Amino acid sequence: MGFDQTPGKGKTVGILGVPLGYGAGKTGSELGAEAMRLFQIRGGLLIDQIRELGYIVTDYGDVEIAKPDRMVPDAENPKYLEEMLVSCRNMAASLKEILAAGSIPVILGGDHSIAIGSVSGIASHLRDEGEDIGVIWFDAHADINTPETSVSGNIHGMPLAVILGRGNQQLVNLENFAPKLKTQYFAHVGARDLDAGEKSAIHELGLRDSFFTMSDIDKRGMLACVEDAIKIASQASGGYAVTFDVDMLDPRYAPGSGTLVRGGATYREAHLALEVIAQHGGMRSFEIVEVNPMLDQSNITVELACELVLSVLGKTIL
Image (tube, rainbow, N blue to C red; front, side, top):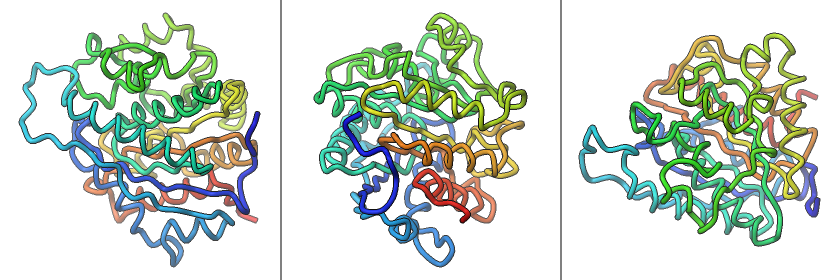
């Protein structure tokens, strides 16, 4: 690979907020980026804690989000498509700017629909360099619905399908190419709540061996599953992006999310997964999504999200 794979001293990080929540069924995740930015973790802001790890950090502010000024009809599927297209184009442009500066983007969401814009921007940047991106996707859900299989029409249930080239063609063809991601470079960790249409899509695309479900984690352990996920995603010539939905964790540890499912990963399993990624190297970007301060309890989800950012950037116990 033509890039430095090791985290730490002298490397640069670009923080990018994406305050978009209308891809989800519940409001509040649009507040997640600011909540993480402003949270005092061990006496300092997140940006200060990242600097203490030895990184040079620039905060690029928030992506300009096209905000709906209408009530969406129940029959609209996907919902808020025009606003999402504008916002995703803005996200992609911001990600390309950060990557062009040689920085590791740390993306603070926002609901998981933002992965359409972020992965599109990263994939487009690498495509211009003749390289592919891999992706490790941490989530309780598959996010591989299309308008034909989605009951809700909420785009936060569709981003994986879109970047794999399925679904609404306007979203699929952002940055004027598709798919953004080749199936052989994709791995999913933590799934436990999948729709029937999503299960069919996973098998149709040959992705079963790339999905490390909570059942797989129970049987094999988080370490083995994450190491396999890294092996898959790191085959991409340009490294891999990591997108982390906090509902991958059990609600006991992360109640501040709009799509809670019991039986998720523990606090330590989540940290272990990201610590292993940091130790391996090769990560090109990190995105954390679905932090909803309106549903949180005493900011424990916001705090955990900040801690996870630090773990994936190389923070260790000793």
